Length: 304
Image 1 (tube, helix red, strand yellow):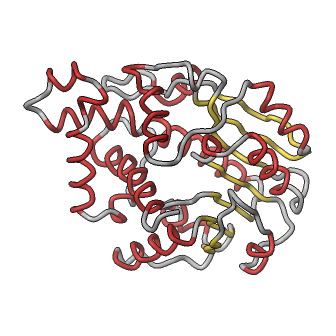
Image 2 (cartoon, rainbow, N blue to C red; image 1 turned 180 degrees about the horizontal axis):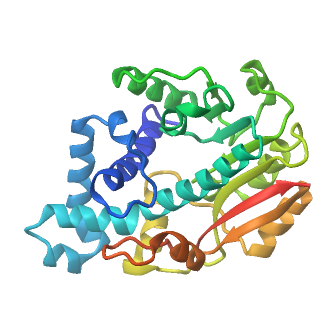
Image 3 (tube, rainbow, N blue to C red; image 1 turned 135 degrees about the vertical axis):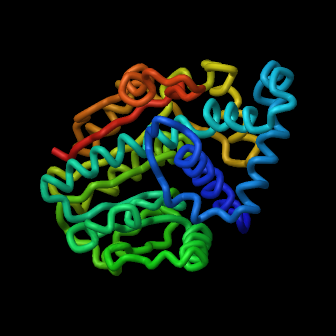
């Protein structure tokens, strides 16, 4: 990983959440802290880069809105950048908070980036231990941003530096206080960039040291990922941009393939949400550009 690469990825994701929190209505997922982790210069730089790239995304919109940069930014953000991060965060936190009411005590965030859950839920500081796992570069970047924003790290938040896509180590978690008790994992925006074998191995490893009832929420691309174009070619654009950035998308699954992988690790699918279902849950009755991203599905799976 080149120095700073993970920071850029984390920044763009935070940009999408911050934009939604400030400018979109109604809210799908209100990450009102995300804006505090992005400097005004970074926000403006990302905005400028997106607006300048409108011809790549949609030449008709480029022509129609050529004098209106705010509308161009809104179009790119709502069509291309925001739908998946917003929907997966909204769904994951809904499941997580339900698990907390059932007595959950441990939450592990794989690929946390600039996640803000612990800061938006101070009421859980004494009842839920949160472990953020990410690449050391990304975690150092986040810690600096928290310090610059005068955001105090809560006592229940533990940082675990690890490239879990290469090798997952439970010892690193245990060193931070992780215990063998019911655990909830989130794995958001990660599976696309791993091979099927790597995903299968990771999930199997995750559930070796946690009891029955532990669960995971993750998003994945279906078997049409490399064939579907999507609204304004946004699926095709997503695949092209990932490849151009040096992090190509590697895997997509049929529902039955994913079911088999989970079954082999002793997990059962508790809930599966297709793009159609996500539209019904989070994107209905809007008068803007936001809609559920084609080919992206969401799963909540539980250890038997």
